[in-house]
Image (cartoon, rainbow, N blue to C red):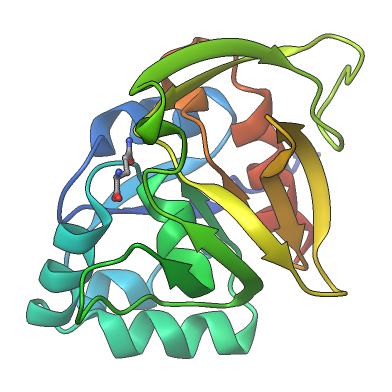
Amino acid sequence: MTTRHTAAPRIGVLAVQGDVLEHVRALGLAGADAVPVRRPGELADVDGLVVPGGESTTIDRLSRIFGLHEPIRARIAEGMPVYGSCAGMIQLADEILDGHRDQQTFGGIDMTVRRNAFGRQVDSFETDLHLAGIEDPERPVRAVFIRAPWVERVGDRVEVLAEAAGHPVAVRQGNLLATSFHPEVTGDHRVHELFVRICRDR
Ligand code: GLN
């Protein structure tokens, strides 16, 4: 008799700019088969996608140049799970504030996100946050904010998972997950495990 293991979901990390390798590593440790995605053909092969932190205006511009913008929008519309961290959160917002004049997002989450929102006071900081939906939710996550956005408006279908400074900083709408902060740099993989679960359950 053979034992069948639940196949690891194949999760892409959008690899046009930003901290791609940290997410590939964290996803691998969280039980996924993680691969960088630079081409539409590579996108077609994945069960879920991470949009990393970096610079959202650059991620936007390069995604359009590489022909990934429309295919990513189409996969989101079909229900593909996507997790966006920091710049990735900005790219999942239906509406942004303080974006570049021609900046476009993939959208998908009914929310308004302000770029560099904390950055007007402090550029970067860390804090402990309780995050709903992760394993062992009583144990806080170390949240690292780097020129981070915050959420200024959420629609009815958006679940707020964590707040900081009076604003949502972690949200979920169906298969779409977004955090203002960077869990890939802390060694605590519970946010990535949550996303791997979303991809597996789909
Ligand atoms: N400020 C960046 C932007 O607007 C996001 C910063 C980050 O991803 N660490 O894209």
